[in-house]
Image (cartoon, rainbow, N blue to C red; front, side):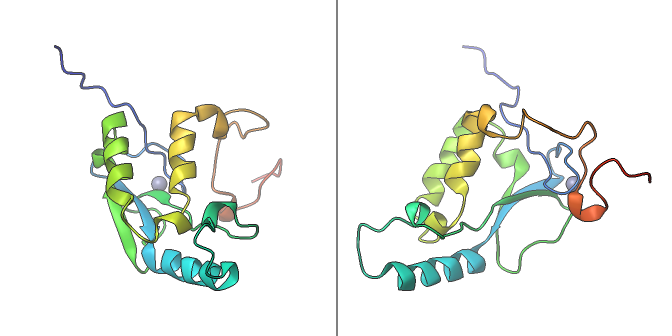
Length: 146
Ligand SMILES: [Zn+2]
């Protein structure tokens, strides 16, 4: 059987919105922030063993971020996956299995992140989109002269 060498997945930087080549970036989460979010949620949700973080009204998951090494800044307590380690469907499955035993995972948007990879129509690929994507935090948004 011929081994398929093409990548299945493309990592796109949250900051500059361009693809991240192998060795140039990471997918990461702030595990201290996820721990804090989970502790706050547990106080609010109480001892109910059937309570689910993702379906609790008002519980906001900590976002995984995708960035070039030179874009943005790493979180204070990063858990990092280099992009070249998550370029294939088996790689994504591997990481999902590996992360399943992390107590803080439910307080993150991992399942939404993977859901968008599997169902790209859930990602921002339709609607009113910028012809030239840019970081809205890096300047004005809309039809303003530069
Ligand atoms: Zn970037």
